[in-house]
Amino acid sequence: MTGHIRPPQRRNARIAGVLVIMACLLLLAGCASAPQVSPATREALPDRVKLDDVPFHGQRDYQCGPASLAMVLNAGGRDASVDALIPQVFLPGREGSVQPEMLATVRRQGMVPFRIPGEYDALLEELAAGNPVVVMQNLALPAWPLWHYAVAIGYDLPDESLTLHSGMTPERVVDVARFDATWARSDRWAFVALAPGRLPASVGVDAAIRAIADFESAQGNRAALPAWQALAERHPDAAMVQFALGNARHATGDGPGALAAYRAATTADPELAPGWLNLGLLASREGDLQTARQALDRAAALPGPWQARARAERASLDQEAEE
Amino acid sequence: MKRLSRLLSPLLIAALVLGSLPVAAAPAPAGNDLVGTTAVLDAASTQSDRAKIREILARDDVQQQLLAQGVSPTEVEARVAALSDEEARQMAERLDQLPAGASVVGALFAVFVILLVTDILGLTDVFPFTR
Image (cartoon, rainbow over all chains, first blue to last red; front, side, top):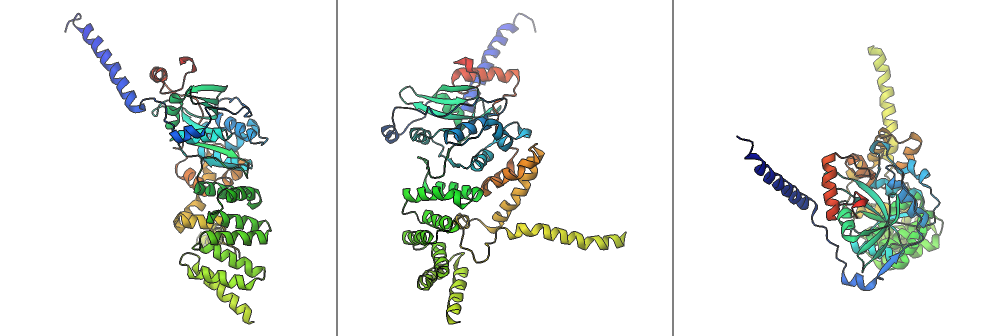
């Protein structure tokens, strides 16, 4: 091998190597193109939205989680500082904050976290409805992740841009294609935090029920009651919503209200055995034995996990009447 | 020695049983109460009893893990309490794999160059000066 043959080969190899790396990267990351907005959404939404009432909190090292939470909680009227949130959500061992605890911390602060569908349309709908959205991004590549939380506060459809409160930068304008590439790496994870009684624009009734039920488990029936009330107003025919509303009313001492909600639940879905069962149990406690018997009969006739309980309650009702 | 263990074993067994009682008792509906909302939701999502028990045990597990990650003991209980059953199970099963939003890159120089290129291509968003 002589020295003067090598250099051109090496040069070719280098170029080839760069090309291979580029090809791999493109395969790995996919091409950055602006996400499509469905025509219906585009029709329904304003061209530009900016939420000016979302305060900015700059993150200190690693603390984009607590900072993002403080921004949405303050925007919703909660008085939570970044310093107070750090011990509630930050994980020292991971030098970051994980998704389940982001949601849990919203609950602790008395607001309901709703995961929104992982679609660009849903993000725009929430912003147009006035709800700032916490998004999780991987700013780098899957192999060397750089996980980051930011708060989306606005968009501009003609300009194809989004406005984010992110890191140390308030109102940072990002190109939508670039944002979507980084957001897609978290499976487009995003949520809104709303005061009980306010509902998200893009979340379906089943997901909303689950979100409010989880909030109720953490914060109690009284705190969740306005949320159930609002959901029942939006979906008056959803049996499960009426049932949950009945339970929350019963737990806060509103017997007649609870009975009305259980009735609405069983009207909406005559197959809802727990609805009949709770209607029967509550009616018998309030002394309305005729309603109680009818409702327990319906519950006892429906197969499922509540049938045994319904039969037992029905039998004991008859016994009491005989005594 | 044998005598000591004969003396100790029943005590230990009793302690274990008593200690696990609240866990076993937790999911059962309290006496004459109405059917709860989450009970119905869980039944609708065809969740088996076993999965339910695993979720209850998960909270204990998560508490230990959070302590190990440096969360202060005064905070840990309230943090776990605010998790939903599903979230507690997620945390218990794969806390170390969950992405933690931190926005700090711990990468080498080679990676730096690659990320610089992908930033310019609009695939990533690491260096603000590329725009």
